[in-house]
Length: 348
Image (cartoon, rainbow, N blue to C red):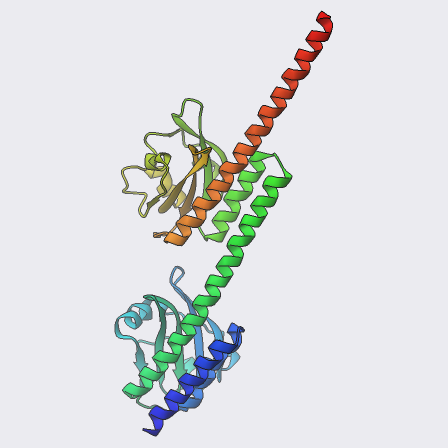
């Protein structure tokens, strides 16, 4: 009972800290410290997971030497499926367990046993919390459950930080784009900036903007980022054959470009390393005038938030084009007025 009371007190302490502190680094370190103190462990580390690159990065730790920590956590691809399925991984003898890597380092570090639990939020593995003991020991079910609970708190802290960082990044993109639109009528430069910033914000390989020609039969390239010259010169992009649904005004996400019937130039896309595509319409005065496309070099399902962000940026691109067109029309009207006035004076 005393052990469970200790777990409960620690959980309440961490929960209270989450309600009063906005410093995520402090909160994550508190989780690591609480794990060590409550389970009487040698060390602990919270690793941030990147499932795309299958790597882990330490974001909070205590009790590990710099040499051991810098050795990395190199078997993410092996443990992520197990953590998602079982909820924990336990290595009773960390110096001989064949599932582990760098056994000699663990022996030199004085590690006996290791317990790993995931930090899950809405089914997504955001991090792993790892506890290291100096002597070989067994972990009881209530200890594993306690570690899972505080790891979950760490997951929510990381999720909140990700959302805040994403909001700041999105806001910065919109502010930069709005400033460009207000300060310049160089539409090509504005759209070029847009492709670069949206590609970097969503961490995709490349982006492009194509506008319909006067006949609305071909999508002509006006801006791109991250695509090779060879790929850009592959040939004309048909409005009817190349992800045509987007020209009806709705975003289209393609997970596998190599098999989708609506994709042109499959061979060239494979050579370019393009796997998944997000295509959103660009509108001016409610009329679709082109598309903004994002290209991922990994199989990717774009989230609803990502689709909404790209759609909003495409709208801003359409607004920039519309403003530039209105300016050019105004310039032409003024020129015509001056010519008419000159002709009238000559006639008089």
